[in-house]
Each structure stands twice: as structure tokens, then as C-alpha cells.
Image (cartoon, rainbow, N blue to C red; front, side):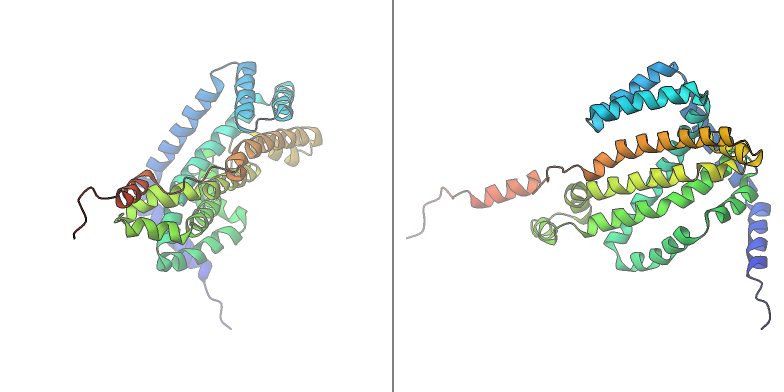
Length: 301
């Protein structure tokens, strides 16, 4: 059987994009680099122990566990003691930017897929392809378009983390009680109004579970992004592995685990905590009360 040059076609297509749309990729690179730098400056502006106190307050307000607060303080003090605080903040900045972009792209696509079976059928194989493609393959076009550095790491991380946001948003909206949706439509609610006031509030736990998975997948790409020159804990681990420095590699890995546990516990609360069901929105309740109010006019004889 003759060889099918799939790879040659893909390479030619990528080269055509670089030759004709290079300015577009440069603009995206500048925007992403600016966002990461701003996020890092925000994180690095307070002293180490002040930021640790802020993180502990966040853990106390969300998880509501003394054990989690103690873990947050001791774990990040350990990171400071290993002199990996700067790298940890760099990693947190990259993960935050990539997760925000993934959610902003994935949630609207999930909403469209939930409201359209045709869109859902079209998106499903694309998501399967994105989730099963080896993560190292994402780095090749990212480096091809954006060069070496933190930007290809952000792009590869974003693409890798989008599927759970789409899938769990679609799942949450599809699992909304159909009777609630029918009641809203029966009282004359428009499609956008039903989505905004009925479906999305009831789908919040599933959507937040998707956000949690996005953050975890983004953090899992840290070490992979370090292979293309991304700063942070991924670079520490890669340097330790390439130089056979076991101690440095383990220190970077421990810092990654600490950051992963903190982000997972804080964000998973919103997906697992039982939330009060919003029930029937107020505008539907008002219509029900109006219809049930007895008329003051005398009954016809």
C-alpha cells in the first residue's frame, strides 16, 4: 500500500499559516505574555507570608476546614523554604491564565451543544480527538507558531484543558429538570431567558466541576510546558531530570503537588457542595400568584 502523506499535508498547512497569518499569532503571543506578566505581578506584589495568609483565608472561606488551613500554611511555607516561591507563582500565573481562557471558550461551546443536537454531534469527535491526542503533540504546532517560551506552554495547556469545560457544561444543562424548562416556556419565557434564569443556575454544580477539571488538567501540563522553555516549576523538574539531579526534580514535583492539592480542594467545593435549588424563578412565581388570585368581579348569574 502506498504511503499516505498525512503528516506532509499538516506540515504544509502549518507553514502556510505561519507565512500568511504570522502577524495574528504575534498579536496573540503579545496578549498572552502581557496577561501572564500582569497575573504574576499581582501574585508577587505582596510579601511571601502575606500571600500565604491570603491563601489560608481563601481555604478557610471555601473548604471551611481547619485541617486545610493548616495544610495551606505549612505547605506553602515549605515551598518558601525550598526557595521555589518565585517558580510557584510563575506556574500559578500560567495555570490561571490558561484556565480562564479554557473556561471562556469551553462554557459557551457547551451551552451551544446542550441546546443543539447537531452542534453536540459535531463537537463530540473533536473533543475526543483533543482528549486522546498525546499531550506532547500539542507542543509541536504551538512552538511552530509561537516559538520557545511561556506562550506555547499556555496555548498547549489551554487546548488540552478545554474538553472538560465543554462536556460538563453540556451535561449540567441537559440534566436540568425538563418540567422546569417547560413551565418557563409555558409562561412565555424566551429561550435566552430560560437559559439565564433556569438552566444555568441549576447547572452551576456541574459547570464548577468542569472548571475544577480544567484547572487540574492545566496544572498537569506544567512539566510538559517546561520542555519548551516555560518558566516555573515545570522548568525546575525538567532541569532536574535532564541533569540527573534527583533532589531538584523531587523538590519541583513536591511544589507541583502542593499547588495541585490547594487548587483542587478550593475549586472542587463549588462542584460538590449541595447548593440550594433556585426552584421556580420569581417571575414565574409572580405569574402563578396572579393566576391564582380570585377575581373581585361578581360571578355572572
